[in-house]
Image (cartoon, rainbow, N blue to C red):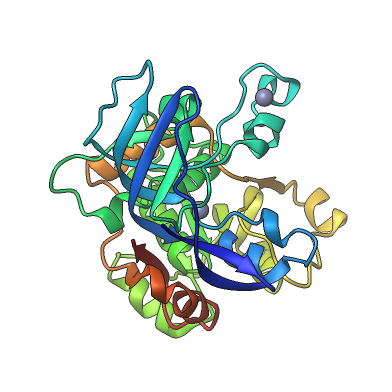
Length: 324
Ligand SMILES: [Zn+2]
Ligand SMILES: [Zn+2]
């Protein structure tokens, strides 16, 4: 079968052995997989030493072709899935820091999302795999994992879906694919949402999602920009006593200054990767069509994965969905 691999720090499509079922779990024929910003970061920061361990692709849509599981999933079912699950029993899990859990970090799909077939284990089936309803667009349901990350960030900011958040306002800094779905999800949570990007083309595209910029003081700022230059912009727009949600790594990390935060009582809250609860909420939002992800992704084939990566890096596209 075909599978993507990082060789000599370049992504190549190689012949690989089809994974086989080992114990409980399932073999999934991949139909498509989203290219995540974190895949690009992994490619950029890969070294000769860790290149073999780099697993690309985790926003998978596929069909179950073999299964041995206590869950209700069946052969022939189309599913959407993500890659990490926590143990729920360690000290990280105890304080809700699920993405810091060792089990979380070590769990993954095999060999990678950009492969014709993958193996998932029983805990994936329990926590990170969801059935795709008939007629649902695959490129849209592939947002299950990234939207779950967004949901976690929104919940870390203190918003819950069943509460009235309509008095609160929020500014999303950076309107790439993650910024757009963050804005969409914030609206689904009932938060009055605005967005800003230094790239005017992105701001124009965001208008199609009803996201515009307004100079104001905001309760919460969501940092989805990959530039540390967005930090002063965040400090300029956050209300005294407000929260800045750090939701992206930045190049040339200048950080937040102690006194900028202290005198204004500003909280900086990072959010990294989703918990199983966030997956559930993400799934509901997508299936109930409360978050619009239409036209965000550009479709490529597996053989064109290297150009999808290039187009993503140079900002030609928002997001790539790779049809396998
Ligand atoms: Zn992702
Ligand atoms: Zn744990």
